[in-house]
Length: 394
Ligand SMILES: C[S@@+](CC[C@H](N)C(=O)[O-])C[C@H]1O[C@@H](n2cnc3c(N)ncnc32)[C@H](O)[C@@H]1O
Image (tube, rainbow, N blue to C red; front, side, top):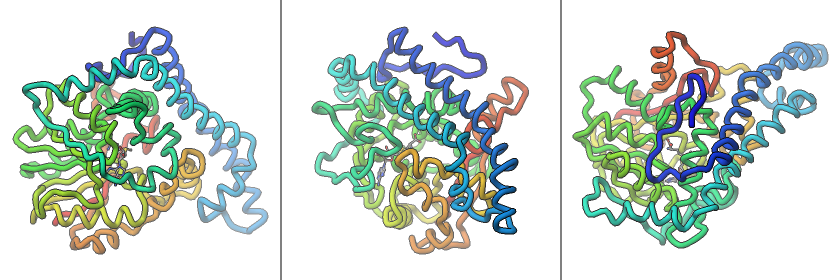
């Protein structure tokens, strides 16, 4: 079905909802539409800013804009930006609906397939759900990134549909740039760890806010002797994650828990990771999560959180564009989460701030693409083939 050049198709597995020809064409249209916006329309915003908005601001204030807020106040009045922003928002809404249609069409049968993984006699990993777990307010208050019902809503008993939709939607959202397994964040941290800490062999690994386990699986593959756990507050994501991992032949122990306070024992992990979890929580949530990481890590262990880069040191125009999600994509904590003092965050969590680290690390997928095609393709997605990581040794 894949007729694209340079973009690998998403890997098929039994949990991934099948699509008809027309459903696939619709999803591919949304992916290509977003790619067009990112590659060919996005850049025009800077042109408008440099040629018109910034000079006008300078004439009026006798200086250039200093903050993303000053840039935004002017840019939101520009028809070019209004067009770009409206189309990007539309692509997000079309992405969810194009991925929901095949799931809604056959929900009962799809959920049966997911359930079969739980009944398998020889499970590689496990699934532990807690129907009593309260869903944090930061997830019930809004449909995060316009995902209808968010991660946690169930549309029938023992539903995994949010996971089914999410797996496909990530491929469309990232325009295939997270690789055939949508696993680029986990794979990139694994690559960084192997390069920088070749002797680090964690025996127990925990992934926080794992959703459908895209980033979890690379750790289980890279450290086959480790026991890998992954938690999320949303049962539909975990049901799907478990079925997906079993079908990919990977052992992961999934449980429904809040990363702000888990039931694992003190000092029981050597490596704790998260991937784009922190910005979807709250100030109190982040503080609690870092404290919990400190409690759960053994001496010498490491926590690593992958995110998009902080605003500090960023050109105000770039910060304004990165801030788009806060106001236009139901990401209420996005803005603030990019301004945190990460050393102070570590310290309040009990870590030694001298052992705190921050880095921009290469995308494993972009490196592999560059090797395949002998050119570096950074710049088409996110931070130009780089992920931001923040972490601490204990
Ligand atoms: C953007 S997704 C994470 C993507 C995933 N880590 C990956 O790499 O593919 C955020 C996930 O975090 C979960 N989540 C949010 N707050 C949480 C919390 N306090 N504890 C555990 N999971 C949480 C959400 O339910 C959602 O599945």
